[in-house]
Length: 404
Image 1 (cartoon, rainbow, N blue to C red):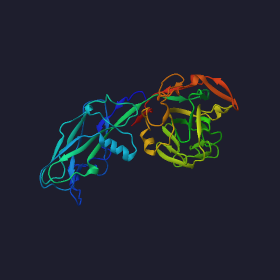
Image 2: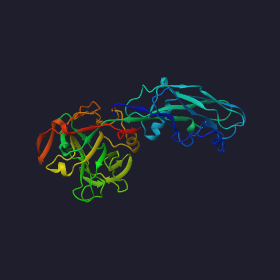
Image 3: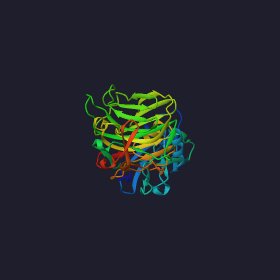
Image 4: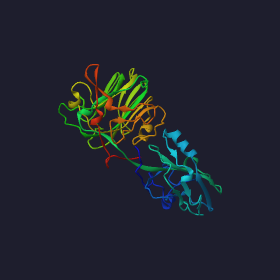
């Protein structure tokens, strides 16, 4: 989305850093030194507002009372981000070093004590922030005097910046917006493995009676991935997924709701098709020759007279095409937005233009969709030109806020 309108800053640990009293309760067979709390998780978080500089406080601890006063040194350590990403499949990026400042890079654990005084690191600004990137301040213990070793697995703390996006989204309220966009011959994607994503905010899911279908969209060409809620014969408020050689619907434990955002993701690795809702697995099906040549995108239902009877009413954002199957962690990293240079991302429509009938491709690969130059299919494979773009509405309000 075009702007991060708020970078929320209050140091709220995702997993609380232990206090000195809590650290005193630790009882290990071997005494070691660590960043307090990282034996549970190396991640903490800051909710960041636009008032700078803002401090974050943490401490270091021993696993038992130290016999002699011990001085511990910490520093900025971007290598810790690479290590975490490699182990967890995340795409975190380190806050630039010139955007932070330590009040002191040393802390003291007094003789007979377990925990040090607080160490304070300050975030000085957020000028470096790019849309879709998740940033962390990486801090590691780099030395300790005395004879107590540093616990390697718990020497680093990653302080994740929690950012908030307020964005425009397309608002579909009438059947006249339903149409297809056909790409030129230079913009066809042939894929054996793939991921398709779209973020939706239904405002009307009809009723459990016929005709209840809400046709969201389809990535089409040779083969297709089609998404529709309430397909006849499937449970109400589940997503029915059609691929080149597969049909299945999402779990009845994860129903779609009105006035709520849902990121819908469908992946295929050549063996298995997996559906996710908001980053959680919602359905699995065996893959059988699921090759797709993507050359068209259908908004709603643009065939015959179905545009009205199968109308999806609601908002749309974050439409993506990948030429590989994403992992669960990658999907979760992208629930709000992502950088446009991610590996395998072939087309990406943030759908945040705010006006007009064009969805621009953020990747620069040339997959802009101009729905004023759309198509409809009155009869099988008989297309007519159609301007659906003039019926696409836009909205930006407090419901279009995503905390990254």
